Length: 385
Ligand code: BES
Ligand code: ZN
Image (cartoon, rainbow, N blue to C red):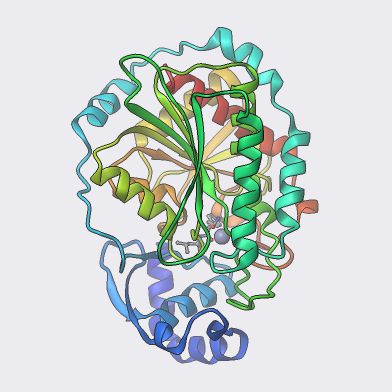
């Protein structure tokens, strides 16, 4: 429905979009004239990709946000086609998920108490202190290095953990990829916890000096992932399956980083059995509840996560829809993997200051973020075995 509204508004008011964009955007700071004119293959989430100049895709996103909507799109141009068919091993995991008993009561009753909201507050403070984390800016690169350093310092005494920078050929900012190797027969199966590291200011898109603190979107998600990782390490957790922690570059410009990663994993036949996406975990717009996005996600993994909330976290939850491919879970979903997207609020009650200089820490509630960290820790610990 969201997509229909965006497409409709694009048709009805294309002239006003262009006028608007010319007044407020300066895409040329980051993209050459040639790049802006180059036709890109854009899918707004309806599965009907269209070729349009890059400038038009960027303007659509910007215009939608200024009008209180999101203008999500997949930029498919540089993506190798991968099959949407799930791997056999992943499919059998999916079919068994409904009847899977909870097996981590003993571990989690302890480990959940080790999570600290103060640490997530600190990470969001540090990440939002970068002027921006834009995928094409120097501070975007620095912020990715900062995140990798945090992972490294937590993992320094573990030789079964690797921290890598995943380089992307088309832009400067790398994704960060951390692996805690599993042991035994399930070690080739992978569980992923992830969220995007980049930020954007859509009011002054592409200005190198633009201020885009991205405290909620998505320093909170990165902070949540880091804290789950810290507790798994500090409690000396040793998984059977391989656990991966990822912060994706270039989400805000068409899910570019996560698409490249998910497609690569698929083409290499990697058996990712579940992906949890944390994108915005700090603004309790609909009160004290976690909202599951039911589009571009797996119903089985969503139900499983809701069970985790009931059993371990004892937090309230409900369902909603983004209405379009709103975050990196959609990249995994499109590659045939199961993904879940627990979100901070309903679509209508979300944080209206994202993508502006007003996306700052003081409107966030870290008790809310704590519920996401508890869910993330339960998710990783349960699916590890
Ligand atoms: N965190 C947002 C997604 C979001 C915003 C979900 C509000 C639910 C409510 C994400 O970082 C984002 O901004 N996504 C883009 C889409 C992307 C494909 C360019 C968006 O929503 O415009
Ligand atoms: Zn965003």
